[in-house]
Amino acid sequence: MILEIPNVLPSEQLAAARSALQSAEWVDGRTTAGHQGARVKDNQQLPVDHPVARQVGEQIARGLLQNPLFMSAALPLQILPPMFNRYAGGQHFGTHVDGSIRTIPGTGNRMRTDLSATFFFASPEEYDGGELVIHDTYGAKTVKLSAGHMILYPGTSLHHVMPVTRGTRLCSFFWIQSMIRDDAQRSLLFEMDVAIQRLGPENATHPSVIQLTGVYHNLLRQWAEV
Figure (spheres, rainbow, N blue to C red):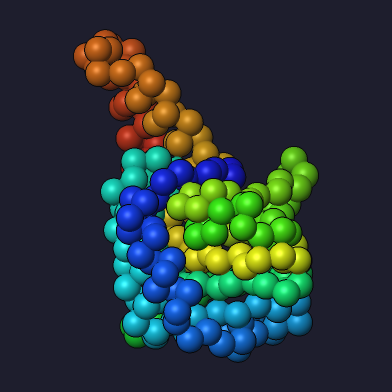
């Protein structure tokens, strides 16, 4: 499942975060890449322990935990602290798959990367190129979202970032371990949850809604890892 999550941060908070990121000190993104990624990665990245990275990352995480669409789609167990990258002057990231396991900074604990996320700080008209291309069973999906919007997609997906030929692409990227490991099961639960919500409060006590809600929670109980 590939899903757009709109308006993760309020506009004022988004603008302040972007200003802070633009004035921060960036480093070569290859310093944080794995063996495969270092060969195809050409961008800049904010150090994970940078105060701005921690501050803005916490804002994104809080916004997502208050976002019903994200919570329904991701069913998050753990969210890796968001990281930040930027592309300019032809920089790009070649085709790769994200590492399956990440260490949570400062803890030594590890988490599984069931879902990948990219949060956009720059609007599409501010830069040329820079499209995120995600390959799934239905082909390639090209993503270039408005500022403040985020794309959520399976961590198992091959993907790449096209060269940025004008302007600067500024994003946050991070991973989520879901309570539901399997993407197909997670998608079914999301579709069921959306259907229940669309029936609306006026149908909340209808026997079919109660039955459907029971099926949702029983499947969640059967599949979830907590």
